Image (cartoon, rainbow, N blue to C red):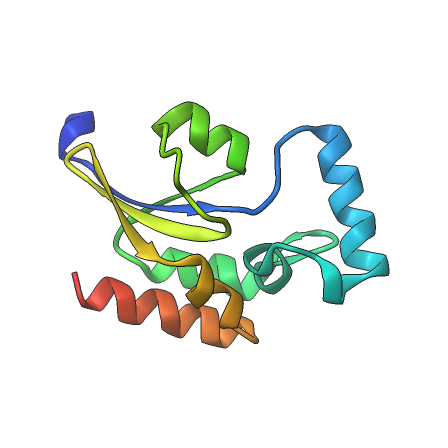
Length: 124
């Protein structure tokens, strides 16, 4: 399958990459979780990495997944009006918004995140 034939689910965190940002995000989530600005991170990650339940769920999807920070997403896909966190569906080199920032921010549990992702993929 060539790169233009691929299908991929692309998740974007509302955070920038890099060790300094990672450390800042870790402490922000630990000390003031209610003010942390990335619900995708909050629901799917623990202080020790990706939650096992989320990783297991992703393994059941019949689609490749990619997780990017804001700066990485802009560098790779150049979507200037993107809002974060969110998720896009990539098919044949074209990105389509799959889960909006508003939808992502409403999720209150990992179970709800899984249901949201499944329902969006089923509509494709």
